[in-house]
Length: 372
Image 1 (cartoon, rainbow, N blue to C red):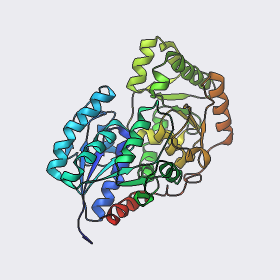
Image 2 (image 1 turned 90 degrees about the vertical axis):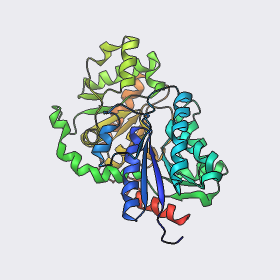
Image 3 (image 1 turned 30 degrees about the vertical axis):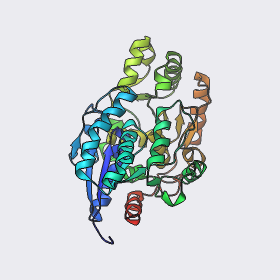
C-alpha cells in the first residue's frame, strides 16, 4: 500500500465548507491522489455557493446533488438518499466531511452504514469542536459525525480534551491546525487588490462589518431587535456594513423591523473574496458566525461574537474574539464592542493559535496517508 494512490471524496454543502475543501483538494493533487468533489447543494443560491467555487478556483463538482432548502430532517434524508449511490459507485478510500452542517452528518451516516460493504473510511475535518449547547443543530451534527469517523482532524488542541471526555480513541485523532486559514492566507493578497472597502465608499480601519444569521438571533423578534438596535448605535460612531443573509432579510420583514436597518449599510450577500477584504480592513467585526471568529483572529481584527458560547474558544483565549454578555442586550453588545475597538487591530498572524499557518491541508493529507 505504501505510495499507492488514494481516492478521496470531499463533501461541500454550505459556504464555509468550500474554504475547507479547496486547500485539501490541492494538497491531494500535489501528492498524486484523486479528489472527487460532491456538492450537496445545501446552499443553492449562486451568491451563497457558486461564487465560492470561482473565488477559490475549485473546479466544477464531480457530483451536484441539488438538495436545496428544507427542514433538518428532510434535508438530511435527501442528502443520504442522493449520496449513497455515489458511494457505492466510487468506493473511495476515504470520504472527508468538513464542519457541522446537515450535509456533513448525512454523508457520515451513509459511510458508517456502508462501511462493511464498501470499505470506505470517514475523516471529519474540523473535528472535536464543542459548544456544549444541544439546542444548536450544529452541535448535534458535530458530535454524531465524530462518533462515526475513523479519523478526526482537529484544528486546535482543546478539541483533543473534548474528544477524550467522550471516549474517542486518541489513535483516531490527528492535530492538523485550521485548514480555513490555509485558504485565507492564500487568497488575502488578491482580496486586498480588490479594495472592496473603497469601492463601497468606506475608509479602511474606520468601519464595522456585521453578519447575522443564527436562528437563535434572527428567528426571535426580541433578539433580532436587540442586535440591530446595537448595530444602529454603533453606526452613529462609524459606518456599519451588513451583508444581509437571506434568512435575516426575511425575518426582518416578518417581524416588521425594517426601520432598524436605516442606520446601516445593508448590502446583498457577497462572495468569499469580498467578505475577506471587508473583514481585513474593518475596525471591528460583530458576528454570530463560527468561521468569522476564526478569520478575524487570523487577520488580527477585533471581533465581537453574539453567541452564548462558542465552539471555538481558542479564538477567545488566544485570538481577538470576545463574547458579548449573555443574555444579549444592546448595552452589553455596545460595551463589548467598545472594549474590542479600544484594544485595536494587530498584525495578520500575530494572535494566531498553533497550526494556523497555511499548512494544515498538507498535514491532513499526511494523516490520510498514515492510516492506509
